[in-house]
Image (cartoon, rainbow, N blue to C red; front, side):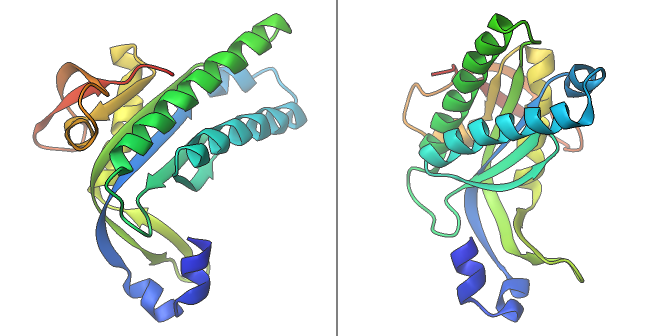
Length: 201
């Protein structure tokens, strides 16, 4: 994306383009409670550790981090160059990220610290890629696909699963990569979604 922003005129970036992509959202569960008794410096150190581990898992699977917001990360696969393995790569990232958080939890528990639990949501579909903003311009992916990925991440709490994917992801990925677990209405959307669980690596 940095290459795209450097090579393309801002007017072209603002016009943007639409393409299919796979979007991953991840968020630490109970982050506010976890940080309640921590000094701000320790919260910053915690976030730095989380972001380093998250970026490593995402980039190892071929994705890129679109943004971090607090304890939340958004990643995109197949941007700016769509690829046939976008969904498989995103599922691999989800598995590696969940496994990385479990390893980190064990390390923290061994040191007498609070364990970490993460929720991950993955969805595939059309997105708009371009520059958004007036004074502060951000090159990012937006659209219903992004919103659904975030909703799936939030649904990991009620379905007690670290990583959930949509049917669109499961259909685009290799067979057996995810297991159907529920058909649920997603907040803000009219129709229900068939939801799949992704096991950690």
